[in-house]
Length: 253
Image 1 (cartoon, helix red, strand yellow):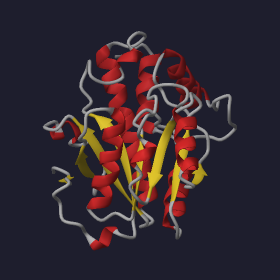
Image 2: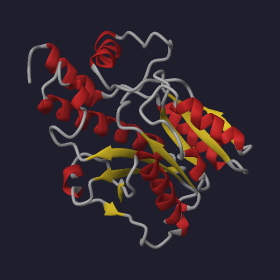
Image 3: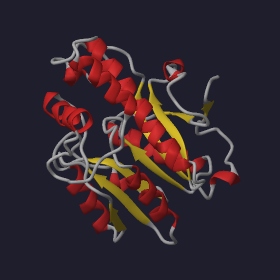
């Protein structure tokens, strides 16, 4: 069954006002279009298959957090027209929101505006590269954004970026003049928030899987039970990803 498609023209829903939208920023998982920096060591087909596992695990994690009733799961996707690529990958009642805008910062800001515009009380944008983020990070983000007052919630990545940004109101300055895909993204975003006296809530530190080195970290975590070096916390179980990595380790495809 196709997922509900939300757009800037969708009618606001009062039932969403008390919920935090936990939205995965994702590309349609097509070979050669996603996770290309993982090839090598993986083939482009394996990289796309792993990306599907990441998406399924992150969505399942969000669905479990959302079951308490304070949050809802979404996927903010690109390109428009590839909605069918997500069929069968997401738990119900996930919704799809098309990305719009040219640059990455524009797309993030537009996603926040569109999610708030259809009635959600707050919006968290979550990357699709961190399948083992502990569920507690998502729960804390929703709780913090439900409190009175304005704030930004940030989940820092150990590469200097962030795996989550959460807002209750539109703040375009948090996405302007940021040097995306660099080790200064988190620091620049914090500085932009501080310049506007915006309260900042920082979640636990985690990591993205972008290349061979971070793929090794993921394999150590999921297959060998070794947490990332920067933490003693065990991450989300990510069973789809774990199963796929086990197949790769055995020499499967």
